[in-house]
Image (cartoon, rainbow over all chains, first blue to last red):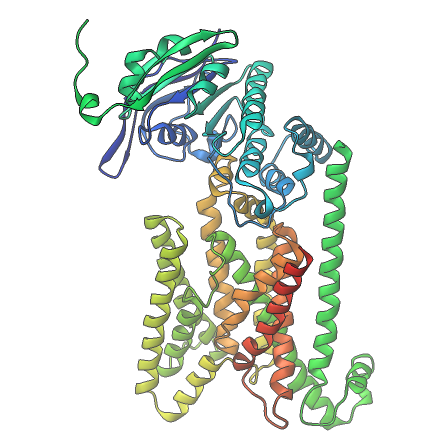
Length: 270
Length: 346
């Protein structure tokens, strides 16, 4: 396996408020899908934006052996693509145009026919062909989310950065999106870093997991080892454990959130 | 199925080209109707004939047509087009459907610039007043745009912040213009009132040429950035992530907006409604692919001002009402008919 993405001592602040405190997660390998999990406000979206060059930060971000930290978002566009949670709601753009325009705005190695073929293939792969000629304003939040994914995939980036790509999707489409991303990474030997709240989806589709807590890496590694009972308690304030099942792993949770005073208590030494 | 998506899109594109051509045709008809409207008896037939055979008119009629009516009609078109284009670019660049040169204070700033040149009786030998007034208007408009850009950098492009700032700017700038009016003598006051009403009445071919030249200068740059602007409507973060230099795009757009609105205001005064509504008309009829939306907004703006110009000469026989007063009266029914028609089609 070859390291695709390495992050060294990445720090990000909003004004005086520090959000990421020197992250050093394990490298993301080629072909891997890595889930970025953790509670609300722990810095998942900030990390993705910092990697995309949309949020300034310090430290080193090495992609394919090159430090991309000095590059702005425009220059990073050649190698990575970022997909935020939602596309604008009030736009009269057709879904097809929303994807096409991003590819036509800058010089592209593809001619018109090649671009049209690639676009049509992606719309078909994600079963969105019927939505292509409808305005974004007439699409549901989930459908717009999928169009956002097509906007990124059409550029065939080395690294996909997806912020909650399944948050507005029903069960079938959640599987469809993550399956497409996983296949894309395997086929093209590229990688994906996906912020996810649904831990069962993360366990099912991702090769590695990074658990963030208070802007730092709490745990990282294979899904079953990174997400043990202690990490679940500290990252989410819940009692639970990861169990093996016929389809891989699943999360078993107690039916109540832990009281805040229990969360603040330091874990006891075994 | 693959074929049908690209083919379906191409069909849409052809339909938009047709719609743009239709809009252009209606505009030409309006131009002729505008040139044929006025107190002296010079009908549509005579105007049409005079365009092919200039000697068919008497000397008096020729002066009325070529020195009065046609400059009046043509400046309405080019100013309307400039305001429509400026409004469309501004709404996309600021991601705000309420943005226009008027609502964000750019027009008011241009009025202040023009008023300063008039009241302070500024002269600069190499340039005549025909040029000094728009330059004054442009400098003030550019200053107000710079303030908007600084605000954007500080607070992001939130709809509320920018619109509130624009409204505050309009109040402050109008207060300054009012102050200039207060200290001005009666002749100067009359000239300033002309700007604030918005009137095509002092149109000359020189002024038409200046506005048309600025429009001709800006439009190719606007169209060159059409794909990037379209991508911006598909989401700012996606556009940035796709490699589009959004900040640079925004600065260029706002500079074009200040140039367009400055020359428009300098020659015809403040006309508020066109820059706001023309882009919405274009959006409803042509969508938001900026290759069509930008020229469509320019044509819709030109059409609105042309219709307003006809109405300004027809509403009260023998009296030409300043076009700025009539614009909203003509534009609102046109806009409402489009919005209601679109709802009924859904």
